[in-house]
Image 1 (cartoon, rainbow, N blue to C red):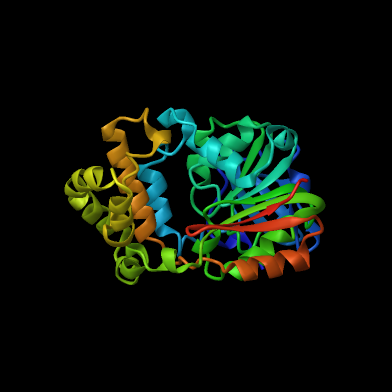
Image 2: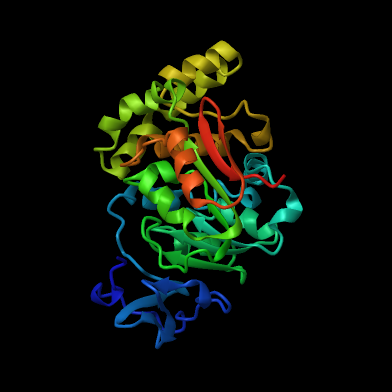
Length: 334
């Protein structure tokens, strides 16, 4: 169960203990509703502090230390509003395959918000968002400029304190494979979507093309390094590999070579980043390379497992879409 936070030694901050109005009804702990009492969320004898307007259900960052460093150093780099692209906006619309008007007015449970790059897009589409993250809630809240239509929650998406079947959309993007047991996590998050609601879940593909690239060969070593050490190593070799991949990325064969053998992710050739400077793109490359090499857990979910769990738990028609690099579970609207 979610562990009561009153034993963590975390006290609410004066003036920062108010949650957004209209969100409290979504919270529940083992069938018990929550109420706000003197800067805490309380359900029975369990109490959880509200700090900076964010309920804190766990201080546990034991398997997310790399992401904490990532959002500390690169808090705005992936935000469309900051990098002046429409990358995250276009990606969400393409991958969900849902029309713009579908999002408007929906309440979304965002499972793993990170620095808020997808949160920003969901808000711009007219959604009301409950954004959950183990480490990055404060960063994301700042990045979306404390938007009144989002409630950030510090919790593990493995064990979330919400009412079942209460959200219009359950949204989990680029997160599932980084949990200790992705299939168990998927089963957990799917229980929060309404019977007539929609889901969008992303995983890296469990494919030969994905699993035999440099990332999965190096992870057994790099995940043992301290995040600060790994970050310094990547920055140390980034300049020469930046110049190398700027050349090799010009051809399809070169990009294939980079995919399997060059431990550096340079997206300078991608048209969606054409408005970003070389300096910004180099920092972006360091960020996404660190993101690839640092997670303690990185276990892509098999499409068959996604399909089986969705068949057992979802009421509305869905599809599992597979490519060489990603697998998507999404509700069909037709």
